[in-house]
Image (cartoon, rainbow, N blue to C red; front, side):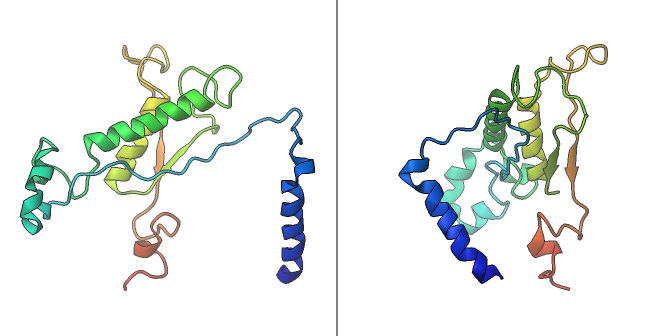
Length: 175
């Protein structure tokens, strides 16, 4: 059955790409959902790096903190800034009057959620995105003076993460 569908799909794609169809416009189109996938930002070198590659010590010194001060491969300040920029982009693109998400405080109404693989660098990366999308000062009034937005981040359970961490937790894991 799949082999019968392939030629039809190919014809449909060719038809859509033909010059006659270049003027197709969507009337009353409305954005209803956005799915954004991202990796963690820049991370600190692994702790063994200066010992394995002594010539790279100058590179490690650019981090302005000892490698041992962080968890192995933790998110760096550069990585936090990278993810903050991603959050700002998402905010500018999808939040505001007439856009997918309204301005104002984060409201846990199911219209937006965040999911992160459970490694610290990934959770911190997601936190940086949420804080840029829903910055302090725009949260609910009457709670804290700084009006933060507390945005929940869902994550997976250790050893059962077959969606985000398939090599470690999926069918290929070592027993």
